[in-house]
Amino acid sequence: MGKVLVTGGCGFIGSHTVDKLIEENYQVIVIDNLSTGFITNLNKKAIFYNIDIRDKERLKEIFENNYFDYIFHFAAQINVRKGEEEPFFDVDVNIGGIINLLEIIKKNPPKKIIFSSTGGVIYGLTDILPTPETVEPFPICIYGISKLTCEKLLYAYWKKYGINYVALRYGNVYGPRQNYLSEAGVIAIFISRILSGKECIIFGDGNQTRDFIYIEDVISANIAFMNNDITGIFNVGTGIETSVNRIFEIIREKIGKDCKKVYGEEKKGELKRSCLSIEKIKKQINWLPKFSIEEGIEKTVDWFCLNFRI
Image (tube, rainbow, N blue to C red; front, side, top):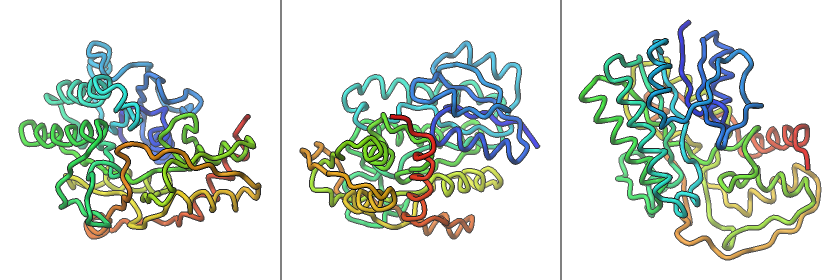
């Protein structure tokens, strides 16, 4: 059906996207430096190159030998807190990486590049909830700023070189394969700690809310945008707020194992509430999430129970 490049294809969202593409008979090439992704996530039918997105020469070689109909760009520095601790690294990977990619493809662009942005932090301290794409983003963290800059770069290269794109502002994605050793996924962290017999640490009072979206819903949106000519920015979420306290209770109930929760100091600069409007994506491509938070967590717990090793 065509050839697709997936950067960061050994990561959480990237590897699930690769699986779906191969299921739909696309030829898939994955590049990943395995800094946060895992080779065990890689579909055996994909062609793999251990390459950093910032490596100009090696990336050029890939494109000299291949034309890609579509590109999914997931390769990134993904940790909000690490971005605060190492801002130059965040900017180098996220902004430097996408410029490297866009410079290489501008003379022979694919049909579309699908970019993994963020809805969780890009809007910043807004009182408009659920937040539509029409709200001007004012992120208050380096990670959010770098992702917003990437969106602006995509727009510029679209206008100048005709590189069709969509930037998908994901909510808080969770599901099987999420890295529980990272600080990015509270659901994976809570599940792993309960299965390990450890206490769960909740930063702040636990009433902070997020728009949690199950991985299968994200993948369905990814593929839907590949199969149309629509360009622009879209939220990909549920439009529903769920507190961290509620997440803890759902997970504890699904696992059926008692666990102590401990409240720690609130993380400086953390958003109190976050929720994405999905009216635009619903109207333009007729997409809606299928999984409730309870259903998604149950499927995630089932996977961790089978695959988690203490």
